Image 1: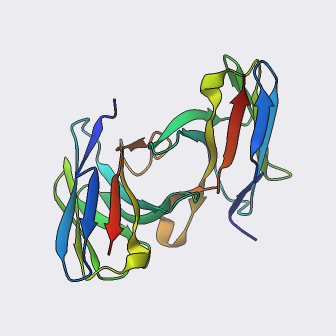
Image 2: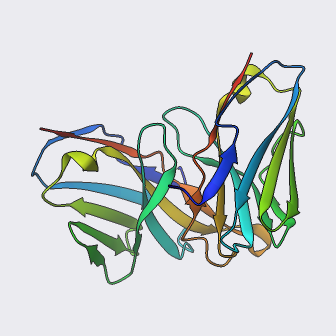
Length: 113
Length: 114
């Protein structure tokens, strides 16, 4: 099982619609969770952290379910500018106390006018 | 605009060449990273420097040699690369190793090995 798995996509969604992505992680010791966004041929950028109680930032809502080891991202009222690849990122403990961020494969989202 | 600067943006090299990728940040971050990203794949961690010391090497082949001359600079020296090493090489920084959530990425170097 991969450390971090995401919906493969692509998601093609009409403008104004609501879209949700899921991501599962394999290491129950993982402590920190994030969503990054990557535009085509650009670098990844932090979209939002994911907190245990769930958190919202404008049209974006992130949820964490530790028992089932998955996180989700909900985008409401989607805009054309939301078209990008969304990367689920998990901070995974490793040997000798070195933690590292592990990226999911990403979910490609295209918002259709 | 990214606060992590990478040069060059594009690089084409032969398998016998020696080249270097450079990365610079002036945010006072003490952790710096090299990632490799193939098309339609996620970034893969290569190296992590913490306080100018190498703290993680993800079993990267020796033809890739990282260097951290000071807290603001990170280099990746390339020698005898293979065509399969062609990829986008991303540099990133964070405040320190304990605060990896806010990774700032540079715009990357698109490397082609012929």
